[in-house]
Length: 75
Image (cartoon, rainbow, N blue to C red):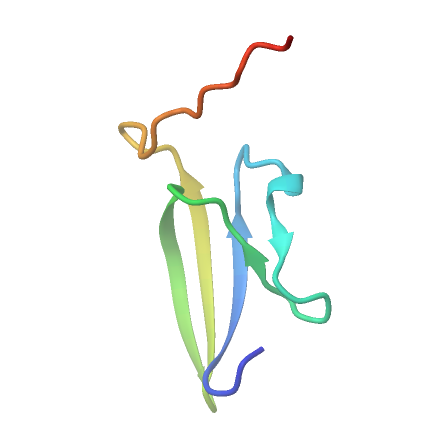
């Protein structure tokens, strides 16, 4: 993790397939999320010494945040 404040993240990604979560660094406990996802912060805890724990839950947005990508017909 980069220097500075550290954060532990506990997330419920709902229907988001695990294959859609890509590790940023092999030795780090972080993931890169797809764009246009909506999350609700369930709790935040400042444990001191620059350590923050954030619990989030993926929620379904009221409307699509991105237009679906068209898939070409197979030849």
